[in-house]
Image 1 (cartoon, rainbow, N blue to C red):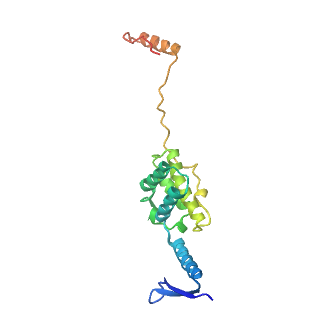
Image 2 (image 1 turned 60 degrees about the vertical axis):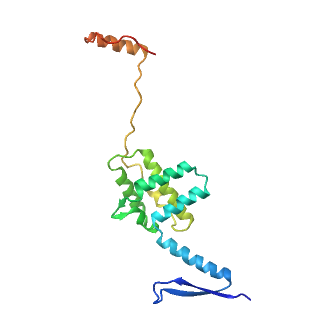
Image 3 (image 1 turned 45 degrees about the vertical axis):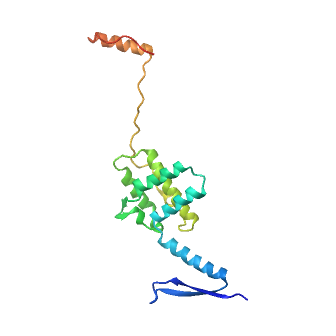
Length: 193
């Protein structure tokens, strides 16, 4: 015969702010406590808390390289954690309240002045995709809202072309001849290759 076990769990509706839970057997009482806190955790977890859990999971239990995890943490802390979206600080928004519309507003606010390249936005999007997939695995949400966000219509910073323009030998000769005809007699006519 199994022993009867009991414990107290938080309950703000009761005057003593807790309730007694009884179960037959140690395994059953452990299951009741785990279920209570898992359900409580799921309802109240914020994006900030989810990010911390996901970053630890990613660092400790996946093959993600340390540099990638550091980059993700830096992206979150720099661009996401304290960002304001629809009047709320992003890290304080409950995961269950995250919608494609909210994420679209966030990414639109990041790209409105074209200060981010497409690659930077893709990296930030990857952080959200990973976090929200992690939340799905933990059964906190049933679908990943980032998948419904259309990134094609955002305004990105244009790529800078830092390449030097290189002339062929014949193009360089024509250019030097043209400069001499314009009165630039002191043009260096030595071509270096």
